[in-house]
Length: 62
Length: 532
Image (cartoon, rainbow over all chains, first blue to last red; front, top):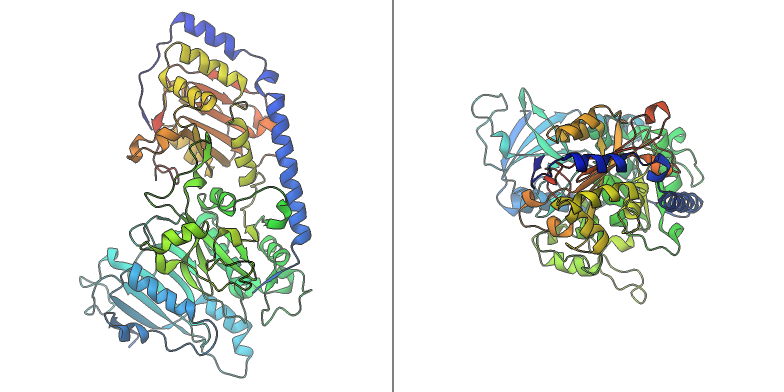
């Protein structure tokens, strides 16, 4: 791992602003809208696996 | 004499290695020899007689010893070398061939219809330009007291008695998993058993008459894997790319079994050549699989290291290259409907993945996660706020990442997905900024993680691999519940911001975020299809 770009100095002002952003409520970090998209994707995937099982006896591989 | 050397310079020398195959599938023999001759550049072979091969012995006890026709239980092992070496007597010493000239071995079985038994042949980008065979493992055969090394993927021809293509693809996959994930060794007779196949609704199991996808899935489960099976018709409306499905597993050293009409093979690697067509520049979120031209497969009836191109156009381009002898051609069954004269990825009708234990989250789940959280409206607001603050204060890398993710600059984002061990992830953070290392130190991680590594397209396509910097990395708990929402994300680091869940192993999924102003993008070696 080799760093590349110049670093930003951590001034007191920046430190205070970051502290404010870091203290955001945990339920606002895990965005419900994004979580909902993930849930829908997982459900679709589960359904594909279920249908695949139904179709899994049709063909023989030899 | 147990050992004898043979020079391989004329057609006659090569033809003597395998007497004519009287029935069965001669293409596997021809293609194995062609690979050794044209790609591995073999120049001599040491024949080791009276070789006791575990796999043939197992098949012999299970089937061949019960036939009236006598079949020997011993095999021969052919060791191939890239050098002319005829003065070594297999007793070690200074005349031993240089280790670098060893190209692998082929077990010559005493079965006339399928003489190629367990084989491991060397493969790398020097032998097959563009080849990235991530499933290959290191094998160390010894000739008396001299040990050689070969990096390759096990292969065997189907004998259509104990093993058809279905059983052979399971056997090859199991061998790869044994090498890469310490799975117990599986012998041929252990696959073709009623308790392993589970359902005998297609008739008797011996001689093998092939298996259905459900039987193969059951067999993989009974052998200790946690397989998943996709049938292409199950996707209905959505367009699914077999290369997209296979890539996260192949780059994680997990083979995938591909089901073509009537025939199963094992995918073990990928082809990505310099100068290959590039993905659409009007799309701003890409996965590395879009740069792949084809899959490298072990085809038990056509030979080792065959190439299945992405599509007919890619097949045509590869035919004009130096890998043309590895491509698979075919005669269309119904030319009025399908005139394609090659096997390509669009002909795949199913995929089986022999996942190792406790990998509950799949590669597809990880890809969906990447596509969701790296989309312009998907970046977690808490991380975005920190990156915007840093960018406003002059953090160039944070600005570059935000511009690529939110404003379609720098060509947008490119990501790759692979499964990694937590110890390897931690090792990669060893040279990170002190604050990043401090955070990492106090965060327990599961043993296996799905890693999503992110950069800009501009950085990804740089000529020098050392300039292809990493801008972000997200890690998902491979043991997470499939409906775990965002709590599957156990660690995220995007230049200047981090998210961790230090209490997750105690049942507390509360995220903790941190701003790290001195963080920067960096080069990481070994990212598949990127910096490897």
